[in-house]
Image 1 (cartoon, one colour):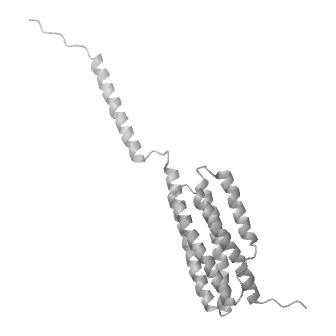
Image 2 (cartoon, rainbow, N blue to C red; image 1 turned 45 degrees about the horizontal axis):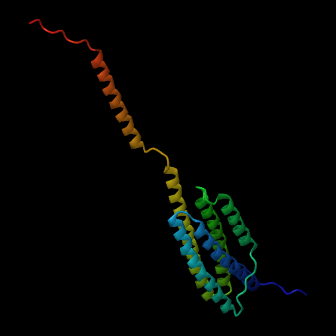
Length: 203
């Protein structure tokens, strides 16, 4: 008779899944940092890569709490996201949309991890693993902050790109005024040329 699966089993299997995903995230962030064009995006990727390395260590601490070896289980979801990121880099690399695409892929990773860490934190609480709850809570805070940072960078990049090639309204009004003044001056000169010369008084 097959052994009945428990929440503890689900927690352990999901922990292995997230352990694999987090290691993949570190690699993906390294590639993204190299590919990013905007300095602020490059810095955001590098900073979160370092955070993710620390998150891997926290997961290893949770394995220790369970008294089990740190083992990774292939995460199909993360593999799919990373594959999509690689395809997008090949398709959009070097274009104006490259950074926006990188941010989209990175946030897909963040949202997946936020969901998974939230689940692990909840299950750890139900299993009485208080130390693990604290570790997951720290990681969740970092993941949410990273996601927010990416949103801010995306908005900044979008605003810069939207402003490229556009004429500022004040500049446009000033240009119109200068053109009007120039036209008025030319018209006045033309009128002066057409005016009949005054006759000289007889001496």
